[in-house]
Image (tube, rainbow, N blue to C red; front, side, top):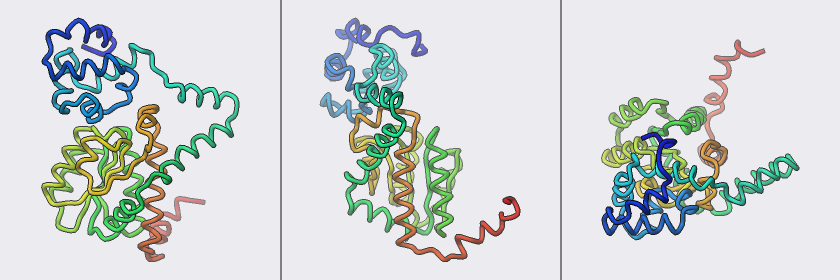
Length: 280
């Protein structure tokens, strides 16, 4: 069924509670007691909160008639009409002071740097600089961010592969050789295509830098270097459309790569010369 045609999630859990398995009831108990927190959690977090496996969470969702956890979250969010107090206050702030709203956004980005593990960050920079080729992967509305990252990396003289289509970047990784690596980007850290591609890359022996919003997710478990875009996990769920935090983190990462690598000036200027006739 489509989300808009489904019954209320909490009512459905209550009605079917006696029909689900004991392990699934642990998840159901958590959702019933914490609906607000459930809609800001990813599948790994909900499993951890409930003391069960991720597979149990998925089985519960299917037993309740949902295609998966993501659909359940959408319906639950609709049912409780959730808007966190901080989201409301930011909306009110925008209506009263645009300048203050920019300061709020700037503060949110600053939190990324304040919470960053310096050793992990420098390790990611070193891996990317020393790699023979970097395979940049993402899906959906994060794909343009991946294309931007790939463009910047190539302008710095680092060989890259990137594509909007998973069939292409899976092919690139299939042909990868020793000394290459992956830069994976996903807000939720639960996108199946990205996860499967990361698993394939690990089978090929490639190291992975992951840019994601959640410390605990299927994606984070596969990362050699985990770079978090949201120090506060609940902030990651507030705006599913904006990719400003990802862009900010990647810009800092790319600037650090540029300082570490010090690319030849001709690498930076040659493309501009080739395209110079297109600009006034």
